[in-house]
Length: 169
Image (cartoon, rainbow, N blue to C red; front, side, top):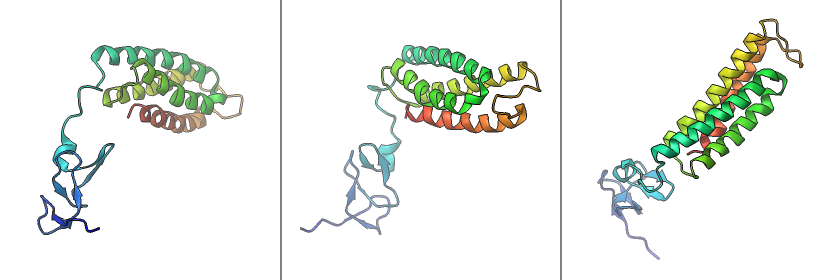
């Protein structure tokens, strides 16, 4: 079975057998864009996403309210029990991201990624200021001082942010 050889619409000297999944235009490997529905030409890939699955402002607000509640609770736990920071960060990333996703009716998008990232940043700041309020000599039950904990917890916050935002993509 022979495939028809075409010329790329943007690079006429490039032979290809690939087509845009949306408009059918011939595309080469230099200009193809991977999407969740197949290969697209740069023009079709750049178009705004459909409004069908985009979250409404009230949905984003509801997800933000859930994110604030999760940040308050887990941030306080993280600040009071810094020895469990790793587990709390995982819970924040997986559980918090899932709760934001659930509050948004399983919608996805950059708005909800920002909500999830804000939730993690808020929880980290609450934990940081709560730990700082306990005093600079505050030592966690695992023996780490305040300064050493901040480095570790910043890394954990980064992992939690990745886990929470990937659920909203």
